[in-house]
Length: 418
Image (tube, rainbow, N blue to C red; front, top):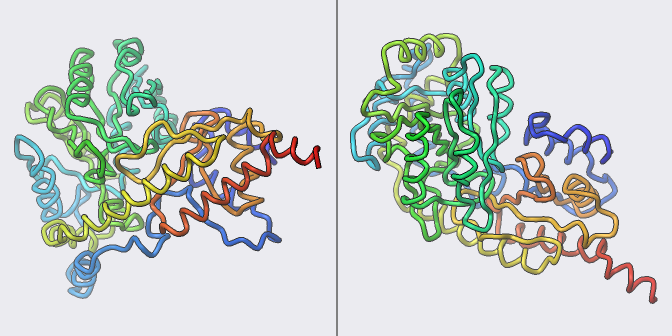
């Protein structure tokens, strides 16, 4: 099986995260009595320590029971929801967004699809981080948009390699994607670094697609700074959702926002194109949209603080446990989001060929699911999601350590001596 999967995963565009994780789950040994612990999917709701607040739940119950929101919503979204999102995002910007800047989407994935579709034109290319989120490649392939990968620098806080961006950008480049807080790396960019990215985008006369689905999930040295802060310097398309911060990924409530106070991107033709595009694609359920104003206005800070506290705790556990596994190296403890990238040294393992092979054998032998790095663009790395119960995370990484011990060259030498 490993050979077939390796062939299929030579390029990230051939696979989705859900697809490879489903294949890993299917490969589990039915005779293995260990409970399955998945650290592969970024769905915190799989663990009981991550539950949304009563305000969030009650807001949806209230709108559903009102019987007022069973019909169609406007294709661009309910006006009160658009207004609430514009006010929510404006709190962290030096200017005020208008409700007309906001388009409600079925999760951040649809916001990504909208962004790429709107920017698609003959010979267009978009600069995307490596490692990154493979949905960008998949969406671009459907729109005949070329993806050019720029490197993130693991030994420098996974910052954007601006030299690589300058080398890749040309007259056909239309945008650069910046994911902050970072998925899959767990980085949180400083104000100074984001400003340099904005200056680089301005130099090349391209806009920034700011993927902020993990917005505000920062618990390290750097606070979360929205890319829209630099909207007066360069047009920014801000993509976000309720999914991660409010712990409701299955609700599929996202947004596509033009943070462009100078109107460089938002000319009449573009706005009309956007509206027409939304006419052909459905958004989230109307009653969930109707709950957005109350959710954004009434969620208590204590709820957010609790989530950040757990994520900081599990990030610390993850970093500490990885240090105990010689074949894994974590260049930086996660500062935000819910996952971290870890380098895999296969030379220390006697019968593991690469990250795909590692993850499949780990799943079968230890019932632990990790995401192969190739899925997000880096061979011989793995992505570990630390949004898990602390005890489950510790147990899973202890099993990874046991897997290393069984497969290490040192173990073979000791067995031969016996």
